[in-house]
Length: 251
Image (cartoon, rainbow, N blue to C red):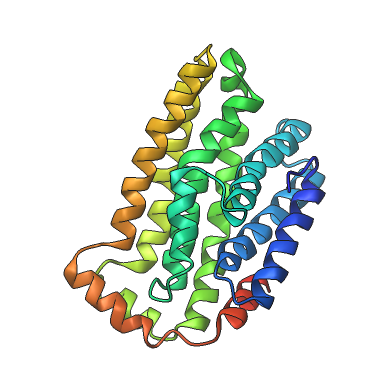
């Protein structure tokens, strides 16, 4: 399912979204969000928003292929990264809310894949030349947070009230996790990975980062008894079928 252009990335993501909706597969939640992000990035590239737009398309494709390959491997019962394994496994369980599913996908893709993709496209000393566009791509992600929150609120009307309780602060967690902390961790991984000169060293680096990302995913799924009880109660009021939720995120 690997892509060669950003257009192919969007087509592949659309295929996952359509298949997921048809089969009530929760993998479609993240795929729908990711397609939306990729379309925005594509428009930014066409508008010459980045310093090096041709390189940004390569980064987008390399970045996306890490998700597309992991998805294909998982669906074929083959080994994928542990970060994606735990995210995909969670889609088989009805209990995690949509926001949990999106968190797990973002954690795997931004926490593990983004830094590796950046260092692959701009290896060694070239990495610093991509930093400005790396920041810009994260600003694009940040601009979509309000839209995603609106989608989530439409699925789960009580989410606004729960967020105001500041127990686990869903609203702030989205902003903090996806924007600043994950971005900084991804850039650090890119710096660490870019200086490695053997395949063994690169593999070891990826495996260590993968384990770290998995630990955070485990915390997302098991946040403690009090918050877990609150989220479990709230989950009962999350409205709509899997197909409907995918379609809302895809809108």
